[in-house]
Each structure stands twice: as C-alpha cells, then as structure tokens.
Image (cartoon, rainbow, N blue to C red):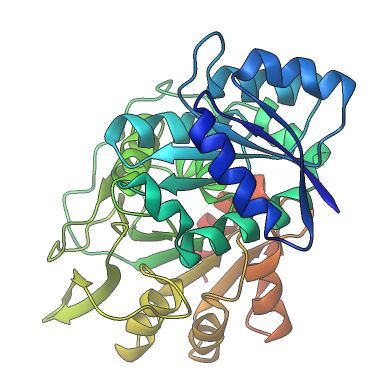
Length: 349
C-alpha cells in the first residue's frame, strides 16, 4: 500500500481527501495534520510515500513546507490549489520548490466527491509516489538565472525560419524553466507550448517564464501572427493550433472535444502543423504521463521535421517521451538541461 499524509488546515478537507483515498485499493492514509510544521514533525517519525499539501495554511504554508521537505526529508508532494490567480501563482511557486504535481479544488467544495475529481486525485497520488526525487532534487537545487540578461532586440523582419512546438504535462512547469530561459531572444523561430493545465494557471506560467527569459512569453489569445523570439502558451481550456495565411502563420484557439484525453492537447497542436504540411518544425516532448503528443510527433518526423524528447533520467514522469520513443518518432533523446542546445542546433538542420 502507498502511504499518504494529508496536510490541510481544514478538518472538512482532511476528511474529504481521506474518504477519497479510503476508496482506493492501493492508497492508505497514515496521518492527517493541520500545517507544514506538523507535516515536518510527522515525516521525521513516520515515512509517508506521498503527501497531499494545501497551499495556504497558518504556522507554515505549503510553499515553505515543500522547500523544507525537499531539503530535509524528500517526499513526493501533490499540492491542492484554489482556482484563483493567487492560487495559480502559489502553486507554480510550490512546483518550482519541488512539488511533483497539483490538483485544483473545485469552486464548490462538494464537487470534490465527483468521480472525475476523485479519480484524478488517486491517479496523481499513485504516479507521484513513484517519482525518483533524488534525481529531481538536483534540478530543484539548480536555479536558472533570472533577469540577468536583458531581452534581446527582436529582428526587424517578422519572418520565421522555423516553428518550435513543445508539449509537456506532469513536471512540465519546472522543465520549461530549464528550457525556455536558455533560448536566445533573437532566435529565428516562433515557439508554441502546450502544458496540461487548467484555465488560469497557464497565464501565471506564461508570466513566470517571461520574467526569466530573453524570449517573450505570452498566453495565446488566438489570431496572433507568429513572430520570431516569441513563445505562445496554450490557454488551459483551448487547443492551440496554427493556420497559414499567405506567407505568414497565425495561432488559433479551438474549443472542441478533448484530444488524447486533454484540452489543450499536444497531439492537437502537432496535428495542425502536420495538416499544413510544414517542413520547418522542431517538435519537442518533455516530461509527462500518458501518450499525448507521441502519435502526431511521429507524423512530424515522417514529414522530415526534427524531433526531440527528454530522457528518462531527467523526467519527473517518463510517459509521453517513452511513448514517442516506442513509436520511433524521435530523432534525439536529450537530458533536460541540454534540450535548448539541441533546439538551437536543430535550427540549422
């Protein structure tokens, strides 16, 4: 059985999460505490396999608790976050500090009992419990330099040489912080990003990446002409696609069914590039559970585009990259910190 510690200042939420875990055949609750300090004390005596952690708590909040846990007694942590801008910002800070994943609390707390929410909680806790934290700790302790370099002046031409399309899921926010800031601001490419996240969180992610990067990072609002040195992040409830008009390319957002179980979907983004018969694409798959992106990455490679995936050792979850490798959809398997270098080299392919 996977041993779970629940950390939440609300007795009601502790009971709700406990009841959900009780329904699982593979999870068991070994403790419930009210704040981060109590969590640290509990971990010293008992050895949970995974922790659910509220963000806002008295005495010690979730972000500080994650920092201390990763420093003293590394244990996989899944955050519980409110669907607010403050909740999104705090959750991204917790992921940067070392949390493996997060679950959003429904606006109505009683919807936590919905089967989709229950299944997501159980699935994410099981996956998180299997993460190799010792390897991930190396990336958490390594801080990408922020705001050291001024954003480089964009080229006067708005013509792009290539489109870089990046897809990721679990572990993605942290992985993107290792890739996007290493891309030069004057690169002759537009960059598309699909990160599996709910609405609201992708705006906070875009702002966070923009603050540490030479390239400009925005959450896509649709119908933007693709410009060199600009990153377009799919909003949390729309598929990000590309259309061609004349000699230029534009983003468009599609509110349609889930693709490969997700919206936004990496497969949907890659497919739109294949449908335009593009041969100037660099397709990249980073850490994430599941298979989203693998099938359509194969089509991009078969159409003479260059494809890169993150290696197993540096992934939080080796699901999406592994699926692409199994489909022979990959030109290069690369350690996380070297992916930006591989992208820059592929610009000349």
